[in-house]
Length: 435
Figure (cartoon, rainbow, N blue to C red):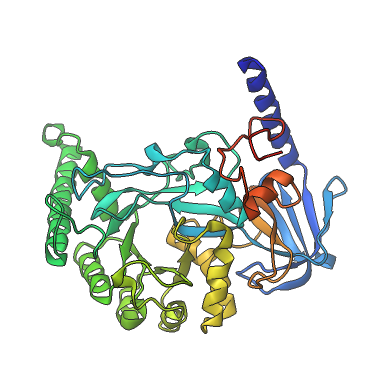
């Protein structure tokens, strides 16, 4: 088929999607867990134009006459899951030329047709923080994505109020960034390099302020320092890979010295310094791994970490670190934390609204409330049951995953062809293994 015909079909599909979002959809009779409000045992979720219009008991929500009514009896609806740390999209960031590369942007290293994105949809994930790797002290700018069915990374990207692309800054310490020169070979040298770079950023910040009133004093562009100035000004959150208790305290020391906002990621030994983390008022994005192996500094990783940190007063979220943990199994991370003593409601918050807060997206996603984005997941049962399946995933009022569809089921359960690139422009999936 000629290229212009494919283009026409894609355009018609997008137009049909836009029209469909304007028609209200009512999911009636489901057990609804809004996260920021009491569970509704038999409720209605009404969405229109990509937003939640109403949520409440069946008797309390008036369904418009023109609405598409979906019988959701026997199903459970929860907010779209938010993963605060992922590597889907075949993301590639900084290289081996140096340990500090804050100018690198994950935006430029993501394949929007990577099948990992659709597999994350199959796990109920609708919002994700995609990070460069942790082999550098500063490995680049992260990007917050909404997992829409689109063709470009710009269309996946979440935008700030000023139109800029939302994201944080990835940092790491411990063994990952310890290498031969020019990388640091010890923990002390690593901290020294980071500290020196932040002092350079402070100087650049001062020069930018002077240049704002006297153009003759405006410094030359420096993309690396400009990214760190955004960190110093609170516009960009530091997402910091760290495992060992001493490494965690080093991050807190730097955070207090330079005043940047920070989320601690992984925190394998976070339970050993829970009081210090709570006193610093720094959130933790915890990884839950249910099998042995990995790096030596994660030897004390415990399923109880989420519960211990939560009881200490720390804002706790979970993440996949996909592909360390498969995005399709994200709910299992919270379920394992519940089994290890974490409060059930807090565990559900940890994969929804808590992670949204860590990404400054709590006004848009993370709970089911009128005015928020219509991101939600239809489950076959309790979110934390091993028998429960993700049946449907909706992003901004549009269905992006349906277990009843053969191609989507392949992505959910695996099999030959499940890792082929996305083929969203096709009228039907014709790739190998997709028959």
